[in-house]
Image 1: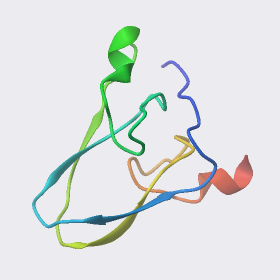
Image 2: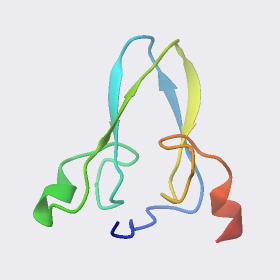
Image 3: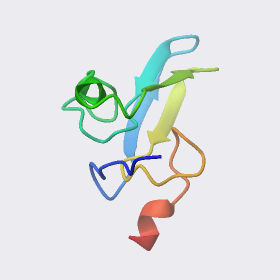
Image 4: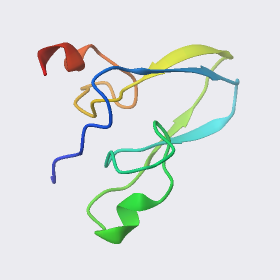
Length: 80
């Protein structure tokens, strides 16, 4: 798989709403980080990742795009 662009070396803290659908940017090119704006469609190598909030709360979406727990941060940015 093609390597994603790191949009930032820290997570994005976002308050999500229960049952709402979010599309996380996988490629790192979106201007609406951490969410997808369709920028991946230019080269067709990536797809956004659907995330459905199970409850209303604050979550940390990965900004470095290196997480093993997509779309949420797992601390991988600390190794960059």
